[in-house]
Image (cartoon, rainbow, N blue to C red; front, side, top):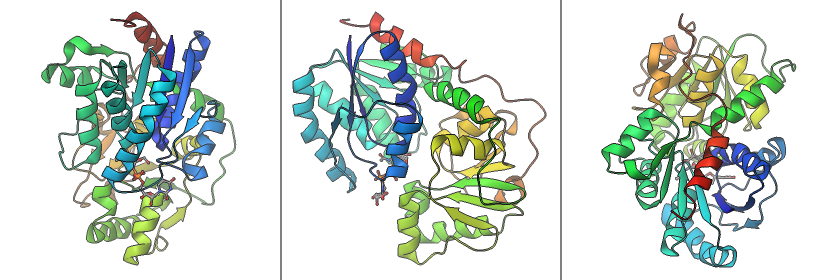
Length: 351
Ligand code: UD1
């Protein structure tokens, strides 16, 4: 079986790692196409190195741009790549512009497409990620869902016959890396208690007033806030004249994956608008506060492991709350989702 993965943004490299290992272990041919959506070394190269992912076979080098320009540029380059490789499956991951571009290019060329992390929904039609998810799910031939809730969303949209529950591949990586870094000394520039903070979603970074209020809230936290600064946040804050230092706030460059897992593991809490980080906090048993109106990972809300604070009225008090008495449930699988992905691709080959 020949599988061609299309990836381009940081969370996709994390998801690619276990899938790439499982495909290789099963003796399949795997072609990796990097769109170039994320191009800074700390947003891309370090993930390939740390997670032992083979170098991409093809790099499209699209870079940044408006949604239309970025996605269109990927689409026009992908035609030739897919034509040359003619894989049995094109595999797309998550909800970025690289996901929709990969799915659309393959569908137009009648190449079977599988969508990993299918069925997640925020039901917020303003989010670029929601457009990408919904359109990719409806375009794809095989929907690889991480959770029962995702399966239900797909069924509600009439897509049950194409959906398979495989579990969450991010859990595979997290459990493996958490075991590897648990005994290592923590390498961060902060003494005492801290929370890990990340902000990058357009709805938080692109509204100057809201961004200012989020940064002020982080500066006023009762413990240090270690802000791992996504390039979008750095650019928008600089444009708006908002300083990312002061009070409790300490900004730093984005962390590599193992360093991020270690930092969360030893933290008092996480404050974020990232999807993956909400789940990673939950799996590591760290309380999370999410600065959004909704979450796709609804299981993290159970028992108060994750609290949504869209209006920024609670973050000062809940960011360093104690962990709930009952431990996080095993809602995201046992760490073997990538094997299920490979099995499912094999079973549905030439359907
Ligand atoms: C993208 C995804 C989002 C995902 C996030 C993870 C879409 C629509 N959004 O958002 O779902 O959660 O990745 O990080 O696909 N930039 C750099 N260097 C880089 C990459 C980006 O400087 O390596 C800057 C550019 O100025 C760019 C901005 O960051 O304009 C935003 O990058 P972009 O890829 O458009 O979206 P993200 O915000 O990263």
